[in-house]
Length: 128
Image (cartoon, rainbow, N blue to C red; front, top):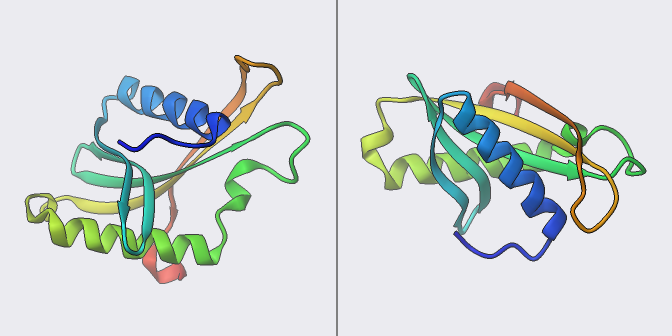
């Protein structure tokens, strides 16, 4: 796992990863990078391999966090997923899914989580 330069983003990703584990998911990767980009979290959930984009925002940011995952980011995430599955043929039996987690943080050095949303199957490759 690489060190993240944005402490707010790391806080949101840490919260999302813990939440996923509490839901029974097994975290395979955090901040997985390839030439096509980066996937925040990759988890196994039953028969699924989920590629999770985490968006962390402050209350005064524009729009809800999941709205920040635009078409370009979705395409990049899909290309990363394709690369990951190519490099990890043992994951080929799992159905891929693209999820988006949204974390809204309060202010301060150790900001509280004000809200958390999780959108399983937020988009498909057909949406691209």
